Structures are given as C-alpha cells and as structure tokens.
Length: 166
Image: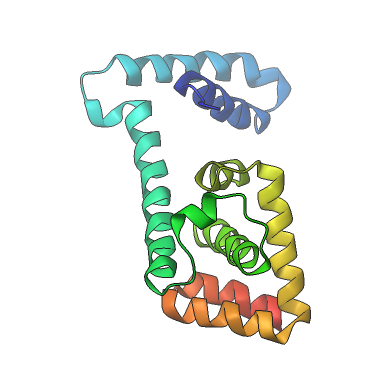
C-alpha cells in the first residue's frame, strides 16, 4: 500500500487542475510540472516535495501517536489489542473509539487511519459511523467516550463530541 511521491504529487496536481477552467488546464499543467521539477532539482533540501509532505504526515502521525499513548497510559487497551483481530465487545468498542479519535483529532484520511490500525479504509468509515450513532443513542457509551476525551484534553475533539451529543 506504499504510495510513491510521484503519485502523491500527481494527485495534488490533478486536484489543482480541477479548479482551473478546461481551456487553461494545458498551460497550468506545464507550469506546475516546471514548478515540481524546479523544487525537486533545487539545492535547498527543505523545499523538496518529499520533505514537505513527510513533515505534514509526521505531524499527523505524531499527534495520533500522542493521543493513543494517553489511552494506553490510562489502561483502556494496549497497542496489540488495537491492531489485533479480537472481536470482544470491550476491545472492539475501544478500537472503534480510537479510530474515531484519530480521524477527528487529526487531518488524516480514512486510508491513513486504516494504515495505523492495520484496517481497510471502509472499516474505519464503518467504525466512525458506529461511534457517532452510539454517541447519539447510548448514555453509557457517551460517558465512556467523554471520560476518554477528558483525559485527552483536546478542544477540537470536544467540539466534535459536543456537536454530536446535542
């Protein structure tokens, strides 16, 4: 599932090109290709696309790791349980809550969250939908999530939680 840097750059360029009217896309593509070439062939290592992209991903990964470490430190589960295949209700609920926390607490895509938990992106989407449905209907589940969020002390996550539980 490793994505090469050229594929990432191509996707970003394709996203930019979608915003440009069709009659100007050819010239825009040429200019973007020249920009990518200049950045990649330049002498400043901080401007390499890989470095720029790597820093953004590592900030997300660091934040996800930090949030999960708080959950591990408070004894909710272990890393092996999160990555494992156990279908026990307690483990599965915490795993799904962790997926919801990482997805809403970072700017990571479903696919990148799936890479952390060794799951398919559709599994992550299902888990997030399940957590949100449970937050709206089950007071015990809501209390469990609230206790985890209290330990995380993340204002953005708290806003998402508050919006779901109103």
